[in-house]
Length: 54
Figure 1 (cartoon, one colour):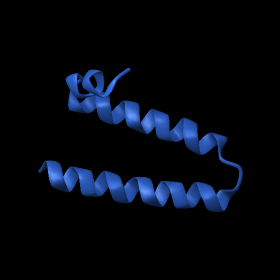
Figure 2 (tube, rainbow, N blue to C red):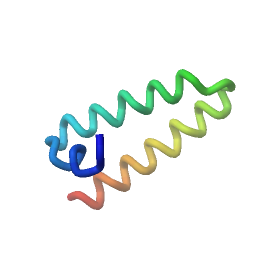
Figure 3 (cartoon, helix red, strand yellow):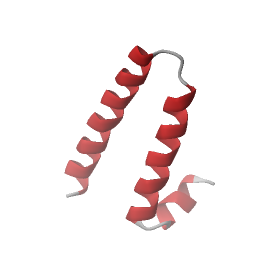
Figure 4 (cartoon, rainbow, N blue to C red):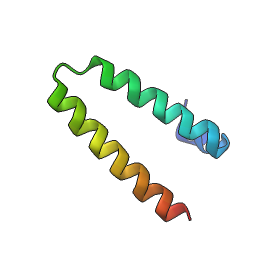
């Protein structure tokens, strides 16, 4: 899928897709430290993105 396809989707579907992609990525990471770092960064960017949208 291209960026245009993702933007064409509704916000809810897009967010669910990103969460699903992140969970798959996190499951493939080796160490708990890396996982926690990725989760922290993901939550931070998600919060910032929601703040900018509103």
